[in-house]
Length: 88
Image (cartoon, rainbow, N blue to C red):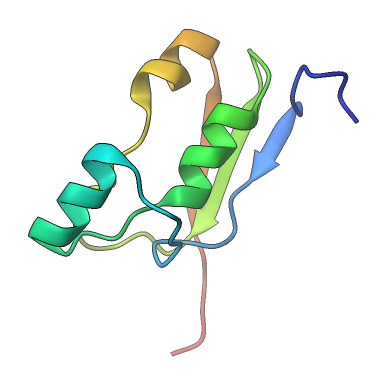
């Protein structure tokens, strides 16, 4: 649909509980530290075209989140975040 360029913007609305097949370091980290693997966030970063925007309207609390920061910076992506207001 984008001619191989990737989307102009991606909204990651899954949150910290997203799981995938887990490759390499993510798989090892998850097994050793029980840290969630934010696979959807990683896919959003890798799928975007250079200069695109990644939006995270989620509830990210807890441990650090491993992401492909090299790809993020290399593509010059913009990250927009906001804590989602949820009912208790």
